[in-house]
Image (cartoon, rainbow, N blue to C red; front, side, top):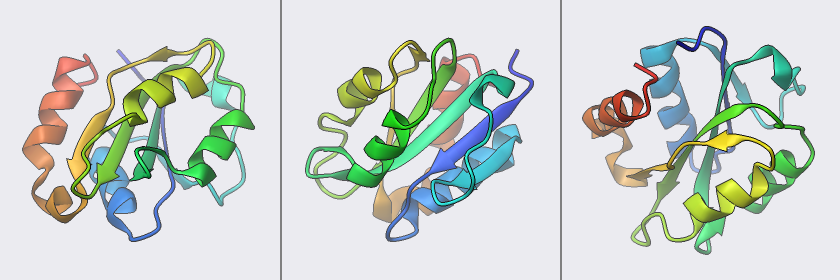
Length: 131
């Protein structure tokens, strides 16, 4: 269903990067950090956006990145790593930030559990029709 996939992430501790790499291993696509040059988002039919949970919301660096791009008409699959707080407002705030995009429910995985999060990731990908 989705032929051109882009995975963009912000990671401070490395957990969100690891989850982004796990997504790429399952679905393919291009993998970028928010520090890499911005691509043409309209060239992709599915954009994954990954952030750690910072103070109950999207990390400021990722929020600023999303606000600097045009996701109108894109399909966005957000993912989040977190500590003890869980998803909190990350999912709702991703929807607000991704103006004009169709946004899937956010995948939350506890940072210390990322390495063992493959089953949860696969289930999320299947639930959203990505796999």
